[in-house]
Length: 412
Image 1: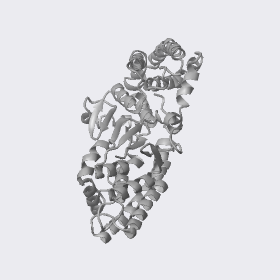
Image 2 (image 1 turned 60 degrees about the vertical axis):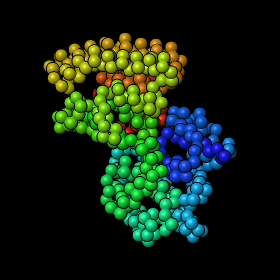
Image 3 (image 1 turned 135 degrees about the vertical axis):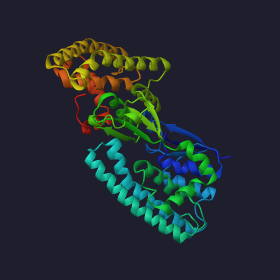
Image 4 (image 1 turned 120 degrees about the vertical axis):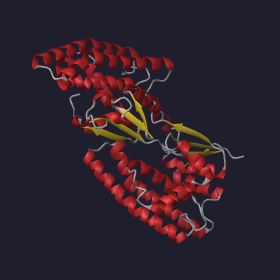
């Protein structure tokens, strides 16, 4: 009995058609799913520093299309004859070309090499236009084949690639597939294949929608975690004047709220902790998680005791200027002792961050608090030894650095 072992990230991506083929053939396989945090260490163990990799009895094989095509022919989903195989392979290569030429630039611009929002919007519009052109051509081929699938013989591996790509497009542009009734029927028919239907809910990427104001506030560490996790999400930002428009639609009349496939979750720390553990930034052991949670809670307590009175006096319940200055001074004074304690913990951990394992979600909360302090009394913050080095270390993490460079500047 052949032993298969598939290596990829803990996402759908290029490996999803491969997983579907195993399910269609009812063939068992082992799977190693890397978090993005684990990937740098695992990268050097692969033939070309990339995944997916499929081990067959211990021998590594690479390139997703080559693996997919091999399994398709082995399991009977590659086309019934040479001519049909040519047709299927052509559509497969065409789908990959669309992915690389238009989908990948959007992913890079919105998640990796973060571009300004205007540039992201332009890239997204290009993707939408090309996807719609491509969808029309898919519908044309479905009409020619007469089988309900790309090939006249029925379901092949290219159908798996096409519907997987369409799934990503439904997340990026929710109405993109519904615009094309024939394509939508095709999409549904592939997912109605019993083995695919059984498999798909297990691996379907959730749709995240984050609801908050159009400033940093309680939400910024959550936005950073999505960047660190290389995970797409919808960032729904309200202006402060619009704060009452959605109040009645949230569980407690407050934000942030994170919707996961339409289900609403609340409380910023709970949301951040969930994402931190999901993406690998919650601490390595129970004891380290306790340490990280302690610092996250401590930052929140500090914010309520020292920062919230300042916000109330200057933003919400605006006080006379003298009282505003008093609250700012109170915030500044409390910050000095707190920042010294932060530096002590960073030095104690030995990692350059709060926890010995390295960057965690607590660092994101603390660093964002420091951003606000620097906006209000930079000289005081910079004057405390070790603070600026720690702050820069967090902001030099590539995903954080790219995000911070393009985000809207807000004082709080």
